[in-house]
Length: 601
Image 1 (cartoon, rainbow, N blue to C red):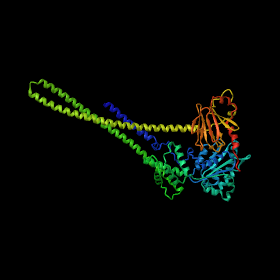
Image 2 (cartoon, one colour):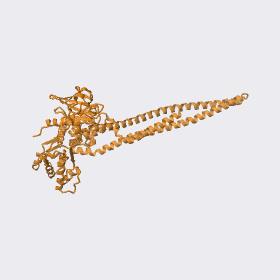
Image 3 (cartoon, rainbow, N blue to C red):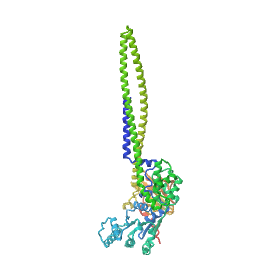
Image 4 (cartoon, one colour):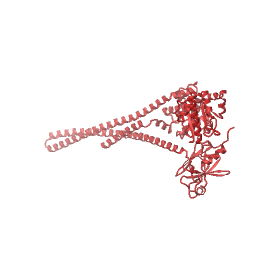
């Protein structure tokens, strides 16, 4: 029994030590996400295209920005209040930009015309900070014309455009006048705050304003959109319950933020942290009120003051997170200390039991010796009486020691049960930490697979040719048949992703008002073809059932908007007999784009 106790005690200490080491190396912030059943922080301020909420206004602004990749003239002007989502739209555009588009971003706008030209060239990779203005303009002209001759477009994106001087705006207007043949070679996207609209209305800006046919102002979200925005970000972060905020909390968030997305992120992030600190499973109106108090948003604070105070309180959040980590680490250390103390107590009891066992053995030897002497002196009554008295005294001593021994065994068993409970708790804690590590690793793998799946599939010249009747090539994993009133179009499914939607940058263009810009995609591998809805408004239907992600089976019927498709597996009779003459999807898209696009007046 003692050896078993030794091994058990050493094992518990090893588990506790491992738990402390794991807690110190693994981000304790996972406890916060685990509390809310999330995979990541849903309310980070940094722009992340995955979290883009497509309200009607944001969808329209996104289509304007995307059009700069193929429009050959004019400006795209997007204005909106601070935190309305302009920067996130630009990040989304940059994450999906076509390889044939050279996109240049400029964020420092408090500059003069020469500094602007130098900055433009620097973003293009040229070292031009010691050049004169005439040289700078010549270098830009040469680059734009050369880029156009190679079949590429150049898009200039300027954020915080309200800070641009009138002279810089005039330089930009002059650059957009550079032509190659019958088309202009530079498109410009200008994003700024509402005062930029007023600047464009100045008489001196009349020519530039006439070059800006695509002008949209992003407005704040309404009550319904605010609730949908919060639920959307929580769902992207891993929430599947839609029960983290109650209805009164949503109303309170709207009242305090007026529907400004950045303020919504700041307030909801603070509310989530308050609920975690108070161990509240649901965020209520009272939780939001606590978050407002933490952010020091007074009744009279305007939008800019709230954003500034939300940013200043970021350090306070970090301190609270650090405090939470310290508490968790202290609890683990307490478990280690308690386990060590119990092990020491067991060792002391074991030592005492060994000592008393030795005393019992010595006394038993004395009893045996006295009994031998008693047998040898039975003829001497006095000696016998003395021996009997000594034997009785020794028997009492033995009984007392036996009682102490039994009590020590009971105490030892009780401590052993306590020690086992502590070890069980330690093992559960280590298992929970290991599960969190596995969860993080799985999330990283999912992100990697998602990014690989999102990479566009390049179409080489060799793929334009028809496929011989002798068999289906190894790159063809299935066939998507587009069913129309004038006939059908076959789309071969190769390795990678096939995009479907009303936006012109999709592989399959759906000319329907019920189709979202990026409605769905089909990811094809050697083992299966999977259709995935990309958060569309009207949904994707397979066999009359709305789906989010679905592994396609032979002859599945697909409806997007009002467009019908049918899927055929590789190797089916349809795919074998109809593969000849299949056109590359890019050619289909070009004809569809020509039919779909109507020049603005």
